[in-house]
Structure formats: structure tokens, C-alpha cells
Length: 90
Image 1 (cartoon, rainbow, N blue to C red):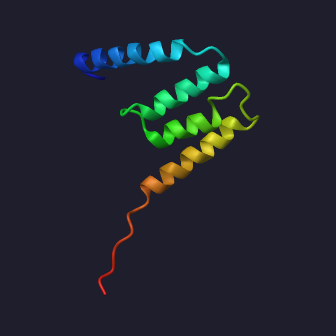
Image 2 (cartoon, rainbow, N blue to C red; image 1 turned 180 degrees about the vertical axis):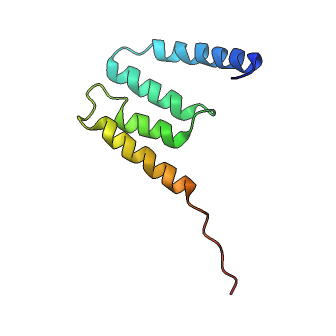
């Protein structure tokens, strides 16, 4: 669980971001604004925000959006879990 100070900071960030999102006029503009806000937020994983933007934050998501997002998340997890390539001296 997060510390109270962290929660207050998150609430302030959310309130500031909410004012930007609130001005959206159409669902497309609103979802694009949510997507950009997620990508710009320092505490959000950029790769996961991109997956959400690409697969879920759409007025008419693809029929396989959840499956496609799942595949993308597993790909990121596999990449991050793989050991770093060792450099060979030579």
C-alpha cells in the first residue's frame, strides 16, 4: 500500500489530469487524451500504456483487442525476463 503522501500526490496529479481530459468533446478525442495522459505520466509503464492505447482505448476496439493486448503483454514480459546478452571480449 502506498504512503499517505504518495496518495495525496497521486490525487493531485489525477485532479490536474482530469481537467485536461474533461475538456474532450467526442469519444475519440477523450480516448486520445486519456492515451496521451497515460503515456506522459512518469509513474506509468510506457510499454503498457502503449498497449492500452493500441488495443483498448478506442471507440470501436478490434474484436480480438483483449487477446491482442494479452499477446503484447506476454511479449514484453518475456523480453524483460530474458537475461541481458553478455558481451564477449575479443
